[in-house]
Amino acid sequence: MAGPAPKTSKRRRTRAKSPATKTPSAQVLRRQIARLTAAWEAERSRNVRALAAVRRGADRRLAAMVAEIASLRHHEARAAALSRLLEERDARIAELETLLRSPTQLG
Image (cartoon, rainbow, N blue to C red):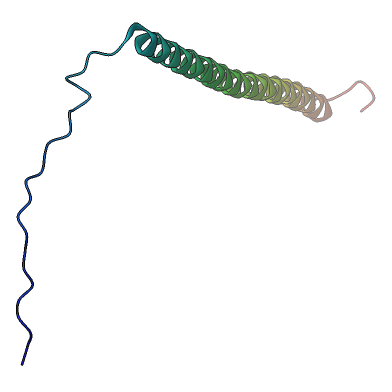
């Protein structure tokens, strides 16, 4: 058989006074302001560093794009120059073929 059920004593619990009802002293408020000000400054510094890093990254990407555009323009200019040389060569070949087909004074 099981033993008798344990007796429960009913105690009245007193509520602890909540800190919200107590008015903080000026020194506590000064410490809290100093802590919040330091946290704000730290967050501000962190955001400034993060923004600088983002700007550096954007500047690097922009510089890479500008270099790529310059390279593409260079290749485009070379292609145009080669195309012009080929046209001149074809014109000269056509001119020489015309001279070959035309009769000369020698025979």
